[in-house]
Amino acid sequence: MPKAILFALSALLLASCMESRAQTPLTAAPPPAPSSAPDTEAACAQAGGRWGKGGMRGLPMCFQDYADAGETCTSAADCQGRCIIQADGSGQCQKTRPQFGCFRYLDQQGRVIGLCAD
Image 1 (cartoon, rainbow, N blue to C red):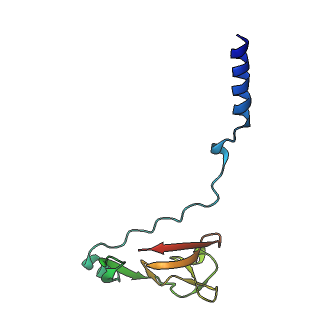
Image 2 (image 1 turned 90 degrees about the vertical axis):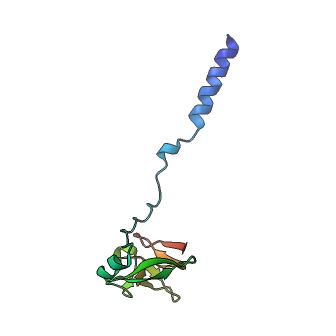
Image 3 (image 1 turned 45 degrees about the vertical axis):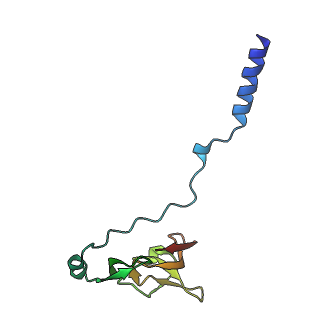
């Protein structure tokens, strides 16, 4: 019987030292999913986009320009798309979606995020 009590007390002691993962808050929310792009050439043209091939696989898709393309930004909140970091470190609103390749952008809080997209 004493071994069972000792075992139970040891288990309780260890359990009280464990960190609860449920209490750990997320530090950054994922960026919101972009609205879906037109998936046919006719729908793309109707939405004011350009139909073409994109990405490494050269898949047909719709390229759409953002109205605030090229404007200065300090976070994603300033842009319709992403706030892309330029070579000089300044932020500029994304010109076209989708955007392929590797680039850095600023999230809603102005933090730097790196991304490679295909």
